[in-house]
Length: 434
Image (cartoon, rainbow, N blue to C red):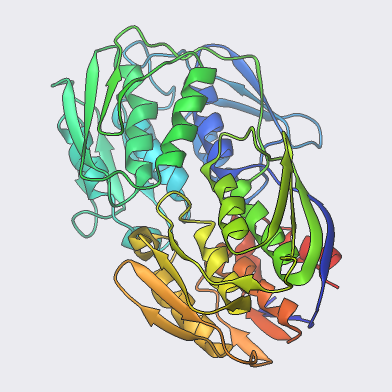
């Protein structure tokens, strides 16, 4: 489908069961593949990003079996430590689409596996930087060549020559670089120290990584957010069974819909006990005046008692993905909303700062774009029938669907881009938009 016409709506209410978290799904798949034993992964997200990870693990010789027609998988791990064997397949070419969680973590794991691997993706993936991760791995003896532009995929990986026990990685480009290191380095069976240079962005995503490592038996020593120690005795051990939480980033669209369209809208599958940082999106909505309630496994949002959201000035470092939804919620707020500390948007599936500024202007917003911020002033009246470009970016499509809650129809180009994380998004959105 080249485009999808969304009808106008003026209210939103209902209950949504969330798909599994992409961040947790791909972390759990790789850890289960690396561990000793067999892991049953329950409620795995079914999306483009998880499919490329599953395909890559199969190509590397990992046992992957879907359990009947469910979203449950049985993963047979390779043993918990790489000096023993590594991935069974020692020569492979992996296509990883535009899945940053898969590309960065598999780069680190393959670099220690003792094989010859080529990792590549779609054109946009080859524009997303990976030099900081490669440099960090090289300090530990990894042998990685760039097959195109220096500092970017595709990559050719050769067997490592283990050397050095300390490395460093910049923290202000992508937290996925540190996640890749944290997931791979326990396989070395050597005491290894990672030093983070500069401010670490997206700290809650590192929190997810550390929580998942603990589920597989590895506890990483942490010195604030600037240093991490991986013990030589670390071994990945299957927990036997693990459930994937609902996706907190995806929850943001429905919670915002409740705040904009009256509500209540309840999301199930993620709540106050979540390990995901994007549950803090609910706090940002509350700052905008929305009524928020939550339990251990659910969050509910309704419009402010005053009827209209208020503008906020907010540091979005901890919620970079969910912050995109705030940019659209700003269309329904009194005053000018400023989203700060979002430089990482520049190196995501597209340049999200530029893309969001462009699309918000199409519906009438006044937008100021900076290197690491957006300032959004809503129009007096939304412009109907805007044609929204999505830049092959799932979050652009899902965020901007919320514009219809202003009572205006819009057209979404390339709606299938939501397959990356939420293939059924538009169908489910239609059940709450009224």
